[in-house]
Length: 386
Image 1 (cartoon, one colour):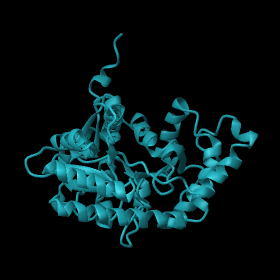
Image 2 (cartoon, helix red, strand yellow):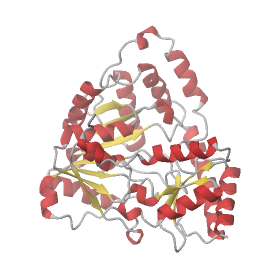
Image 3 (tube, helix red, strand yellow):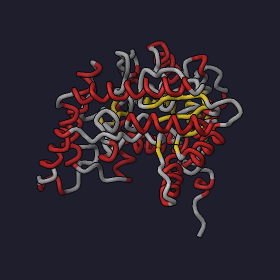
Image 4 (cartoon, helix red, strand yellow):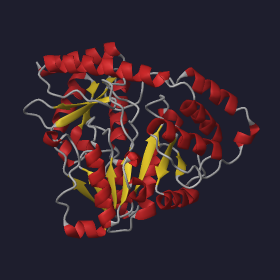
């Protein structure tokens, strides 16, 4: 049986590989501490769970959902955009429910990219940006990222022949995995590049609610002209501890929203309406759970930074996200270091090169582990390094 040729070019999904290695070690009886996947260890807030309990009893929710998302959910998402960012989007034409932002990012390739064409993606970023292109028999041009420039994907120097065949520019700030944040000037430059070259700008804003030291992430749609070229992807996963619920939304340019919706109409049947009802309560209900979550992650960030500094691992304090982006010790590649701490310390960290070519020499540490286990993991790494 011969599979499609695009699968030959698709690397094993990074986090699925991490899960496989974790499960293999645990099956051997090892106590594995995973600092790999960004899956919150705290439960979904009780008021959201209670809303789901009521919604699931409603017989109307037992039928097929609306393809684009229920009008009530899309209205709640649009209202949240206005309250949070002061951005107006039409619930009917500029808002689309997603089964998590990951599927929206993957499906947008189908809506816009033809075989052989290009997407422009950060050289350190969410693997689906380039994986979605591979599945379309398309190509990815990686935009250089460096610590010296704040891990902002560099928009200059893209070859003319690549720009002529490019269809989408992906960016995401606050950035997974580096924790970097973007300036207004950077967003304006990205918008202008897309305007000049007729590109769709996809801004992945999944981490906008997790900020530290008073930082609150913006929406790119706050910038002038953004809606002419851009859509923005949001997820309820991190802010409300709803990773397993698979619910998010896209907002922005009406043409792009319509195109993405047409792909989804043909490939899925929409998210379970009861989950959408619970998500409405998350978006419209008390938001103190977000502040509590930010305080929790900020405390863990500071614990990890202090512990890493004590063992000579260099990293900067991120302003946002649930990750610490750390440089590997001298003498190791990203893969060598992660393999060493996995096999000798039974601690999982994510190799930076798994996020793209400029991630080599770095690792991502997730803060979604209780304080004591975080400190134990760093102590194990310290003993491993001798």
